[in-house]
Length: 183
Image 1 (cartoon, one colour):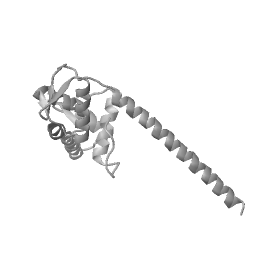
Image 2: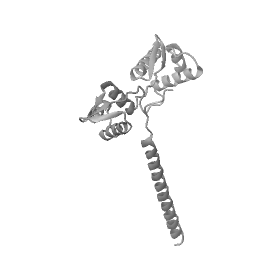
Image 3: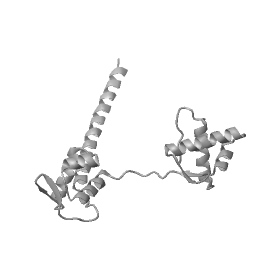
Image 4: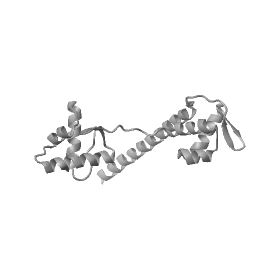
C-alpha cells in the first residue's frame, strides 16, 4: 500500500496513490486508464498531469513500471542484517581485521570486535597476527544465542527496575494528592 504524504492530503499525487491502492484492493490492473478513471480526470490536460504524477512516483521508488502504461507497487527490499554482511565479508576474504568490518560492513568497532570474539570462542575463526582467519567455513552463518540470552536477562532486570521506580513515583503522587486534599 502507498501511504499519503505531504501537507496537502488532497494533492494530485496523493489522489493517484489512493487510486492505485483502491485498484490493488479491487484486484484490478493498475493501468494509466484505470488510475485516471479512479482519480476522476475529465480532460486531456488532467490526464497528462496524472501521467506526470505516475512518472514522479516511479522516480521516487514508490511504484515500478511493469509494462507500457501498467504500474505496480515497488517491492521493498530490506537491507541484509549487519551480521550477515560481516559473515559474507569474512567468507570472501578468509582473513579480516575488525577495522575491515567497520569500514566495509558499516558497523561499530565494538560490535565487530564482539562478533569476532564470539566466532573465535566457538572455533570458527582464529586470531593470528592481528587478523581473524576463517578456519571452519560453513556456508550458512553460524548462529550463537549466548548474547541474546544475556540481553533478554538484562532487559528483564531493567524492566523490573523501571516498574519499581514507577510504583514508587505513583505512591509519591498519591501521597501528594492526599496532602493537597487535606489542606
